[in-house]
Amino acid sequence: MNQKEKNEIRNKIEADLATLEKQIETLEAKTKPISPDCSLGRLTRLEAMGEQHVNHKVLDESKLRLTRLQNALLRIDKPMFGICIECEEEIGIGRMLARPESVRCVGCANQANR
Ligand SMILES: [Zn+2]
Image (cartoon, rainbow, N blue to C red; front, top):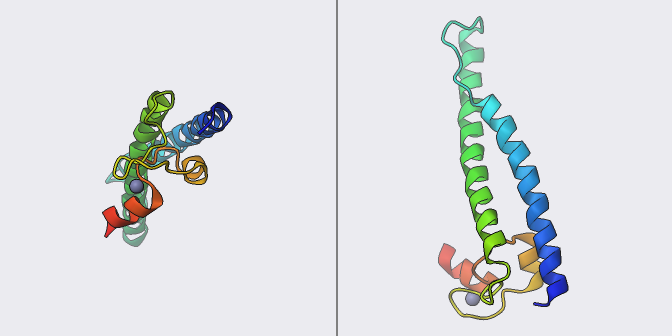
């Protein structure tokens, strides 16, 4: 991975971080507790709670990805950045641009998911 590619990845991380921060802000507003005396009907209230459950899940995932991207930004200038932690091969610029938080190559990531 050369310096130009690292700069591209850095830009990608910073863009993703900005998007995630906005998304988290929106989700946090949506996941505020539903007040029990709100004038919604029973069914609507259940629907609202179901939707909130989904939003909570997305919020947790977004926060996790935010942390991983922040860590990637800290690692980007280290020699091990872009090297798979399992097989120590280069992860590949395509994957790093798509998911800059990757610490495993496609092959090792697939094995880890199995
Ligand atoms: Zn690997």
